[in-house]
Length: 241
Ligand code: ADP
Ligand code: MG
Image (tube, rainbow, N blue to C red; front, side, top):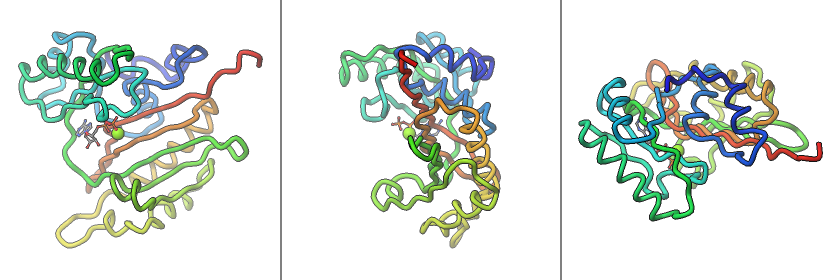
């Protein structure tokens, strides 16, 4: 149950080679944590009493999300509940999350529910990566929400990243001033973002089998950052090679 007890080798082995290329949020977060990027503590619960025990150990409030290899965007199936403040709410949320996922996607296999600490609000950014067949891994950085979806305000670099690349990636997005502090908003920890980009690049160099990686969102604070969602997709294994 403890996150981090499974090494990246074990996580890769468990899912790959096999029929599963989309890692669960719990598996993805364990990899990202091992890569040296701070993630919000997250554990898999397989039933509601386990969920309540985990919530009690983490401390309330918690966030709960459905864990299913078939669900890519958890919010789309009603699979995310934030701000759960009592064990009663935690138990009810378990059933609600399973029920709404079943309703939205009857064929989905549900492994359980991820119970995690509720992170304090911060500036939302996105760290991502994808593998280009010709050039290898590309790292992406942008601001969360509309900034990336509508305005496509992102910066891109090929792996391996230099420190200079990481510095530029954070600074060249149009929305940089939102990170750098404005009016009464304190600046967020830009050095921690650069560090995360560099660690991501090192991780990708070590793991060519990663096809896509998405940390969306990462909360950015005056001191430190915290990934609250993670999604890793592995390359399909070709049985003939
Ligand atoms: P999806 O699979 O739909 O992308 P997310 O895990 O990103 O689901 O959760 C949806 C939203 O819920 C996030 O964008 C974030 O605003 C909020 N959220 C998720 N996890 C946490 C958390 N641990 N603490 C605080 N807010 C969270
Ligand atoms: Mg997300």
